[in-house]
Length: 199
Image 1 (cartoon, one colour):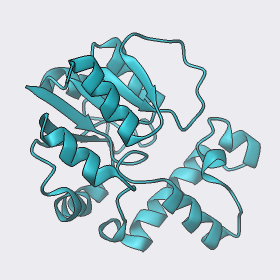
Image 2 (image 1 turned 30 degrees about the horizontal axis):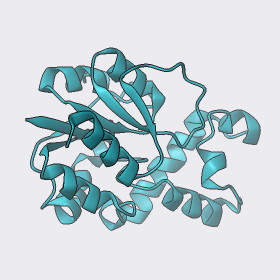
Image 3 (image 1 turned 180 degrees about the vertical axis):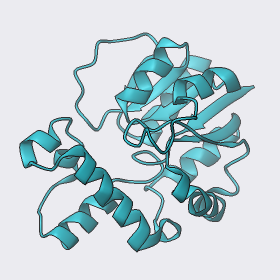
């Protein structure tokens, strides 16, 4: 049976929501493309720790339970539920767990037929120090495909033998890897899976 692992932030949740919130609260006019560019902190003078605190503030003030899923995320996960098992593999910090579980069950209940795994977060190592990495969870749980947008999670998973659908919002200059598939939409990601599987 195929086992799909779904990242949340950047895949099931669209970062455009955070960018709009950030622009409103901090009086900026960033685009999502700028925010997701790897050199964002250097170009705009917003250090990673400050940016992480702002992301946390958005989650806490808006409320994770009030966030909307990314367009197409629910139907995409329902499609893969017909092909196998869907699990969530997320590195959200401990304070977000309860609200994340609520959000998932409220929005993805008919599509989520696997488990929810909270992994190590390279932006919050002190809060997630005892956890496994995403690649370690994928290997341990036999995840066939990981839907991910962060190369820091995607590349180790691919190197561990997991096929990764990398939503390439960052315009990465990554070296190619046979298990790494750059995709730009849910339709393309699922189409790629079906092509690989001969479905």
